Amino acid sequence: MKKYIILASVLFALSCGEKELDLLPLDRVTADTFYKTRGDFDGAIFASYSSIQDLWGISAETLGENGEYWKISVVISDDAEADTEVGDAVSQDIDKLLIRSSDVPYGAAYTQIYEGIYRANLVLENLEGENELSEEDKTIIGAEAKFLRGWFHFQALKMFGTPPLAIEVKTDLNDLALPNATQEELYASILSDLADAAAGLPEEWDGSNTGRATSWAAKSYIGKVNVWKEDWPAAITALEDVVLRGPYMLMPEYSNNFSHLFENNAESIFEIQFGGPFSDDNIWVFDDTHSENFKASQGTTRSYHWGAANGAPGGKRGWFIPSEDLLNAYEAGDSRLETTIYQEGEDYYVWSANSVVTEPYDPEWSSNGLSAKKYLGKENAVGANRSPNGAADFNNERWFRFAELKLLYAEALIQGGGDVGLAFDEIDDIRERAGLGPVDRGLDPMGALMQEKRVELALEPHRYFDIARWGIGADIFGAAWDDKFNVLPFPLTEIDRSKGLLKQNPGY
Image 1 (tube, rainbow, N blue to C red):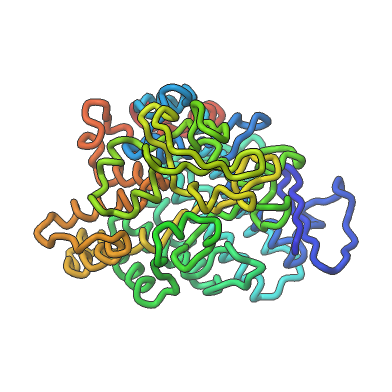
Image 2 (cartoon, rainbow, N blue to C red):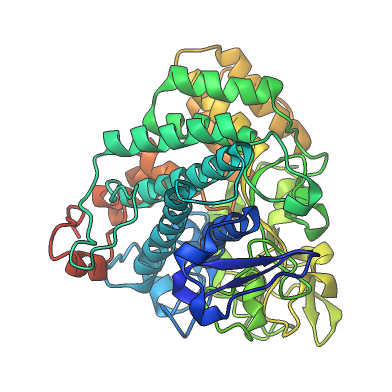
């Protein structure tokens, strides 16, 4: 078991294995004394991973976050809404597409993304210094840092359109700001980083390193990024390689993907690792957004924000709820609905006061009579999936699943003039698991793809970005839509801090 200590914003980690090490006093750890061993570099790369966890963090000590990424990836979409009785004001405004650059979600996401990029860049910069790494170590660590740098830049591109490209560590306090990058520059850098990652990362890690990016994850992202870029031939080539030769498969049961009992399963391409039951048993865990003694940050606050409120057992916030529009999107007999949404007449499960509580779901517990069940439900309402203070779950966030990749492959085939019959076959694979028959071949292929992707990935952080890139915002939101919403606003604080070098997105 490894334990890692993160030194606040200095971002240097110390790694302790089974051997006892002579450690310098904490106030003497510097870049010159730290970046020497493989353990040092592993700890530093894990710091970059930990910035991903922080997208969902809660913090009264730093940015004032409250699960901000859910607000700008899920609640903003037609899949979910902010509960009108218990939801916070910012969530309710975002649900109405009232988007302000001064609101916390945009600044929080921007900060965590560029923190992650900065940490990856630190690793890459220090690989070139004097250290004890073998050439193989340098190849793997460098590839992993580039995967993370590319991953974070891709998230920034999806959100902000033309965010800065940060590919070096800037040290001049008078010259820290970066301008907007063009989409061409961003795509070139992201794909270059992912190509280096695919070439240098292992196909799999041993059990003590579960959750680290693999070469297959990098290849999968090359395909996904090319879908966003609308480079259909490149997307087809990359995604087809993963579909035909990769290690992934659909799990037998849809619900397996959201149970803490099936973390890092055969369908998972990239998964956000959370902790538990102890404070330092997970390589991604660093307590970035709280003091070290606040152990709820070892997990995710999903159940805290999405669990039923308004008198429901368990005392959850219930800020975010599935929409009726999402409920109505499911076909009769689609087994995914039962995994995704709580409705009247079902048994509701929640862990409360050190035991599981089961009560019939009461529609009075939310403002529209629905509550989220995905990642929650019976299997996850257990003590093994809870932090010691009861405020967080340990269930990992499945960010990129093989089901999504198959749908991206189908989309690339449809949009790129490929084999539409094969695209329908990919969609049918996913429908079969849901207990549904094949897609009617007489349907519009893109329409069928969009429908299937919505219900397969419901309440996962993809729908809004799909709406934006497909250009269907007006169809979904009607008069409330403005095309400026295809990208989110840069945080006002970052515009001000850059002294105007960073330009705001039009309309904000």
